[in-house]
Length: 416
Image 1: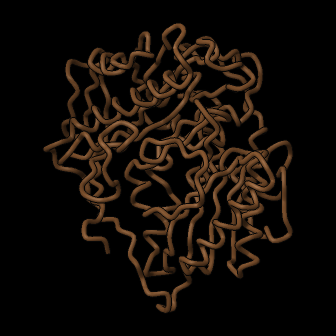
Image 2: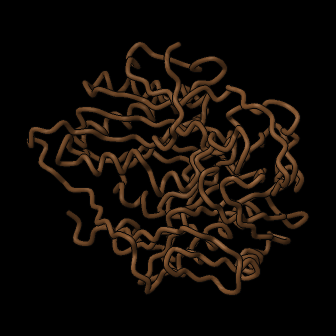
C-alpha cells in the first residue's frame, strides 16, 4: 500500500437552490450564480457566461454539452484540485479529496456559432431532464449546475478550448470547496496494492483508451494533452482523483466525460475486488483513434507487453469513441491474446455493428447501438443554443454518455 492512500470523502447533495454565496449544509447546496459566472469570466477567451441549475423531471434540454465534472476539492490544499489542468501540479491519488454526490457540473458552448468548429465536426450533444431521452444520459437523472459559455469573437481555438475547460473545473472546485470543514456521509480509503503474483488470484489489468487529436478533441493528463503518448501505467487512484480531464467533444453518446474518469465504475470494481476475486494487476492508459496502421499496431503491441510485465492473466479494454478506434481496440485484444492474456473489450455498436473485428475478440461487451432512435420531444426550455432536434427522432449518439465504453453506462445490446 502506498504511504498515503486516497481518502475519498463523499458529501451527498439532496437539494440544490440558487442563493447568495456558495454553501453546503446537511445535504443542501446553495449555488451563487453571480459568483460562479464571475469565476468563469476570469478566462480572457470567454466573452460571457451564465450559470443554471437543472433538475430531473424539468422540461429542459441542455444543448451543445461539452463535459460533465464531479465537483471535487483537496480540502488541505484546494489549489491542487485537478492538478495541472487547473490547480498547481501535484501527484493525484493520495490524501483527502472531498466530492459532492448527486450533482454534476455540465459545460455548454455553441462552438459552431462561435466559428470554432464546423457543424460536421461537432455533432449534436444533449442532456434531457425529462421526456423520452431523459434516461438515455446518466446526467438526466441527477441535478446539474450548467455553465453556459460564449466565446470571445476572434479567440484562438486552443485558447477557447483551454478557457472553457478551466472555467468548468474552477466551478466544480468552488462548489466542492463549500464542504471544507463539514462532516462527510462516508470516507473511503482507496489504494492500489502491490500484491504478490503467486497469491493464487488471477491478475486482471485494465487498458483505458483515450484520444488526443487537437483542440476540442483532446484528453489531458496532469494538464498536458496526450498526443504521442506511449502506453503508460498509472496508479488507478490518480485517475479517480482528477489526473485525467476530458477535452474531446465529438460523438456525445460514446464520449468519456471527466466525471466518468473520476467515478470510473471499472476501476472501482477492480479495486473493490482486489484481494477477493482477483489481483488488480494495474491500469494502462493508451491512445486510440490513431491515424495510421503502424501507429495502431505499435500501441497495441506496447499495451500488451506492459500488461504482461504487470503480471496480467486477463485484461479489460475500453474504447474511445467509435469507428476508427474499433481497430485500435481489436488490435490490442489480438496482441494481448497472442501473449496468452485472456482479453475482453467494451465497445459501442455503430452503423449496425462494429467497424472492425478480429477472431481473437471472442468476449465483447456491447454498450448498445448508438444509432438507435429516441422519439422526438419539445422541451419548454433549451439551454446552450437550439439543436434543431425537436421535430425528429433523436439518435442515441446525441445523448451525453449514453453508450459509455468505460463501464459507466447502463445501456447494452442483447441478442434478439
